[in-house]
Image (cartoon, rainbow, N blue to C red):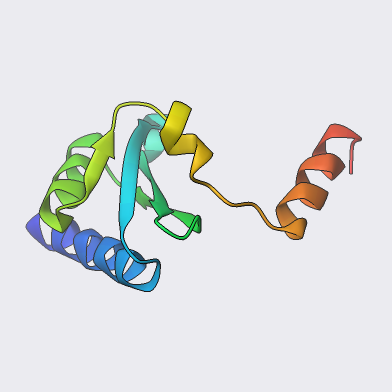
Length: 96
């Protein structure tokens, strides 16, 4: 477990370094584990999947970044979407 926490924390730190800092939110995704949603200070975003919610929480803590309880408000507003995401979201809405 400690190895997985360390590996995820390293990935979180790499993301934060390349985006001028980062914040996170951890979401339970059932048997698959937990999703760590990362939002960079530059608006870039990404995610990682941990095998358990506990491992995800520990990885975020080890990385030393701010963790939000939910993905809304000011935190969600930091996300910058590109033309790709807008086209992708529109495609989902119209069945594409």
